[in-house]
Length: 456
Ligand SMILES: Cc1cc2nc3c(=O)[nH]c(=O)nc-3n(C[C@H](O)[C@H](O)[C@H](O)COP(=O)(O)OP(=O)(O)OC[C@H]3O[C@@H](n4cnc5c(N)ncnc54)[C@H](O)[C@@H]3O)c2cc1C
Image (cartoon, rainbow, N blue to C red; front, side, top):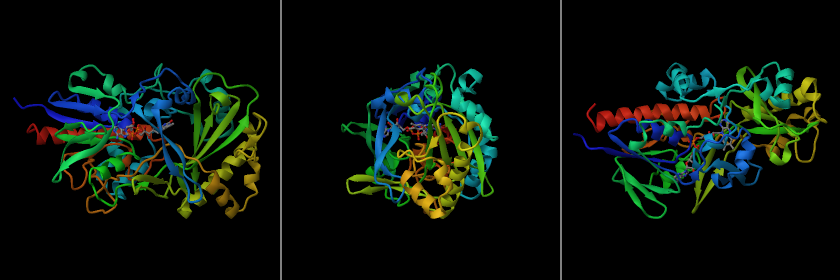
């Protein structure tokens, strides 16, 4: 009988839970999932601000600059078993079909066209929920009334959050799966050009036949560097959706419930769904009377970096560094400012402001392009949708780090399956796309194990 093979999965977030759970379905594999934080788990709480507030130790703050004029500030990422999927706003969208066709045709990832991935999205074992009339909240209702393109958001919810933890919970799996929390990995142990295990921050070494990195787009490049990987493409290609938040004081505090219940996509300069406007029923536990409108660019060209800065790590998103993004963001912000100064959204609250100086949104409509660019450069926010720092693609393409199956170029038995591998950020919130990507890469890893270790 063939002996069991050991696979170590590093990082128990959205991708890591997905990959570990799926690999453990093969009883010939012994799967060890190593997560740096504690258990976040699946919460019954619908309000993601409250989840974040009560989970202080389940988030990590990376120092990051968003634009060339903003100084380094906290960029929030998940830190614990369940990852981003356990603390996020649960908005679950696949992205535009063209996003994946572009991965396949323009970015060297042939097996990732919409026709390849659509059925994977459909088969994900997550229960999705659309808010009913009682769950919409004041802001959700106003957006649906005031914006023709608005729709109810699809949320990963089934009487509780539906995160990738589902992949760990299914019967059959525990006997092959060993989940270890508070186990931060410092490096992959590579001998010659073969990964043979991982070293934890306390010095413990765990040997493995195969290692899959799922530590998220900001941490995975750092683990690769610490392991001696020198591909200059590692850390390049960082992306997120640039965003600004408009806010208003509501007549009454928001009731308990989902924070995000409705959003609408906008076409900009002929690009479908290039902007997303999201209604926030409130902006936090201490701000339940503040309604918000998230205004995010979903189709982006600008690229940033995660880079080593001596012993430290520098995270620079370089948002709006590409003039196409500046043009599209200006158009989007003007559309959003028009939306809140006319119609249903104008009728709620006491008027809309666009920054902490209480500047009325209408002021944005009077700004020249240069003035608006400079306002954006200093007021821009993000959506915690970091992707793209270990891009997949052909090994001959010097901007890629892993193959279209997730195998690290030049190192055998080492794979990446998290948000890092996205060649371009999709026009959607990223959690569902990460789950899809991790599911497919888990399938490629299983194929590799079956043919390589077990002879088919
Ligand atoms: C506040 C917030 C709100 C969001 N809202 C939405 C939303 O509404 N909809 C949506 O689609 N997306 C949303 N997202 C984005 C989405 O959750 C992420 O894109 C997704 O979780 C990324 O998955 P990942 O597996 O790549 O990384 P993560 O889920 O972040 O997982 C990475 C894991 O690796 C662990 N780790 C890191 N370093 C190490 C190490 N050295 N050793 C061991 N473990 C390590 C981390 O602790 C973490 O648990 C949100 C994200 C945040 C943070």
